[in-house]
Length: 357
Image 1 (cartoon, rainbow, N blue to C red):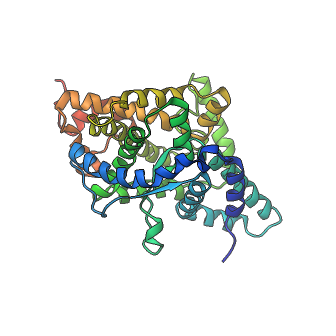
Image 2: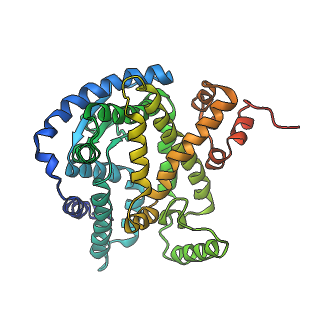
């Protein structure tokens, strides 16, 4: 087997080194995390089911509490599976020339630096990628990054059990979306695979991307606003895919936030404060972090929470609490990014509201 176009071993070493350690990871506070999240993840499943009507078709959710290094390794494994089509193609193009090892190491170092930085900010994550011929015990997991959760609880004096239940509700909602809607996982991964497989590895595309970015700037738009650097390299066909991926992710993230607030409203008195603190945390990042977020597209992801929530509020205001269920009926009913920003267009398209005469 030829080596990968990315040096994944180097990526892991760089990421783990960049992630650093947190003193709370080795404190007695950490001892409660595993038991709490095992219990609260199970409780969250019932609460989310009652709030949304979604129930997993893949059995009970399984919680895993990670330190930063474990979260990094889990994501590297997912990246390897997800990026296999493009890394194989790049490897064929780069081949075994003199620059190939340098390119692999450079890519590995960049991926590692990104994952190391992110590992200090992520609180929870549902790993939706499932490969049938790989270990099922290492897939379909709800991950919680223990040191980051403990650090926030300490910094803001959060009631630990309330905060952990609130986080579990969000991550379990994502699992319900992908395992409770029969077509959702395959549809989402099909969109992502389409994006990854269509990546243009021609160096001339770099020049075209720079030209497009300059044109965006001349028209008064920031070319990084809708997906970071990756968005600059998209072809017209990929832009259509990005429109659908962006709409879907905004819907899912907004639905996750709305559900976490509703499902535990009677048991999590501090939910409003948790939401305020995390929104401020997103908005008050220092200037360097904000630049990094924009470059890698995380800035666009953070907007998805807000835009998705506004979309759901508008949809429910127009047609009632059950109106959103139409989005789960079939892939064609999912909103695009343009419809997320213009809920009336989606309501008209799916027949909830008749177009004005």
